[in-house]
Length: 134
Image (cartoon, rainbow, N blue to C red; front, top):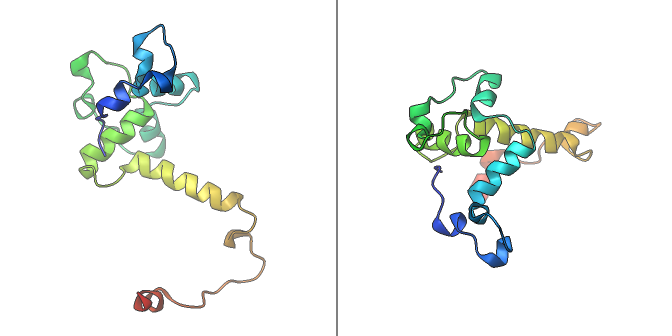
């Protein structure tokens, strides 16, 4: 995972975007940045501070070289964090925290999940037994 996008996402086909008066709207990155800003998403740095981790610095993000001096849009921050802190192999703290919150929220919202079971649940097999089958 990193902050680079392939050319086909930076230059979406007309069949996908439709006619656009502004050429930048043919870029998925521009559309995502606008969507995030329009929906009030916090910056990646704000989320990092909120969960109690040190945010990446401007050099780690790498946008200052192109004139960007504001805080980083959340989606781009998550990609940069994975690249800088985890060599692109897995999510960093902000991305992992958001992913975990989504999964926990889905399990909690599912009234059929084990979290809402009235009886005590016990597995029929333990993990080592399941692995032995493979």
